[in-house]
Length: 130
Ligand SMILES: [Zn+2]
Ligand SMILES: [Zn+2]
Image (cartoon, rainbow, N blue to C red; front, side):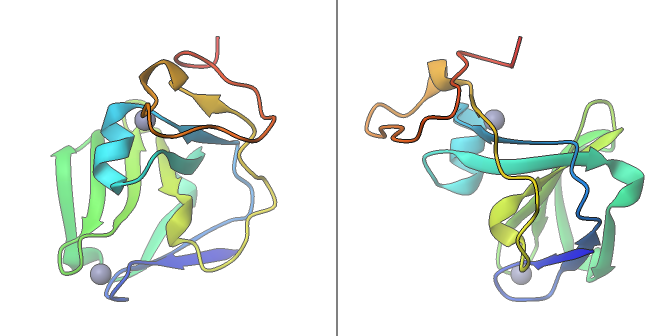
């Protein structure tokens, strides 16, 4: 199992080290929610993901089946519920442990911040992976 937490520690979660996919997303939404050039995230079916502390401290932005979950105290973006509620995208920066699966590609490079240059050799996609 992997564990993660927000900046202030009020919210903690656990997730099996069994992500289905991991990607770096350069879309403008991910840039704004993280305040970063891109968001490294990893996906897993929602039922595998557990908030172990501070579930009542979450700030949910969006709807039941599609939303971002932040800590309401420190604002950290911890995860997003996506794909009609079926999957969770864990914001990898909040993990305390290193996942076995590392990001395998850059997506939404068509929306990339012009001031950021991708310097690794991972595949790049204009939008979603085809
Ligand atoms: Zn927090
Ligand atoms: Zn994105």
